[in-house]
Image (tube, rainbow, N blue to C red; front, side):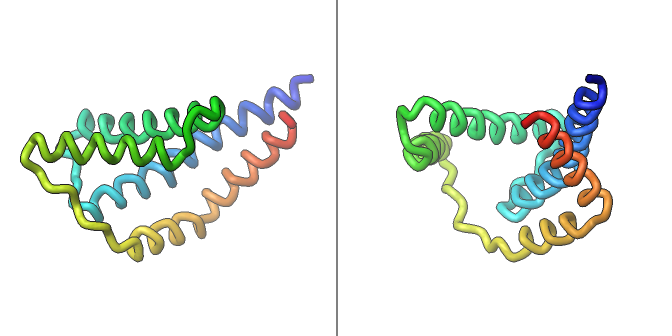
Amino acid sequence: MSAPNSAVADGEDAVTRLWQRIHVPVFFAKLAELGIRPQDDAEAEIYLKMGAKLHGAELANTASGAMTKTSVAAEANSRLDATLAELGLAAPAAPDDSQLLKIAGEIAARPDVAADLATVRRALGQVA
């Protein structure tokens, strides 16, 4: 009985490490590509929270079936455009994703990341 709990705990730890090793660096690399560089940790946390809120809204919307993913994204984008316009700021041009894809590939090739992914897969096998 303790083995599945241990595997799940190991999986949760691996997810946390993957979040720190993959999501956070790639997220901030993407922001930098857009010319957004948080001034301090507090501002960086705001950007992460904004991303998490969008992700949570997408998950909740998908589960409820109330709107399509596209309409949630479109509504958020429209409101952001309106807020930027109110502030006298222009929306950024579409970025070139080549640098982001390069960074993501380098991170995915790391042995520690592969080990954490394997741990998460094992933990998911214990839960399913």
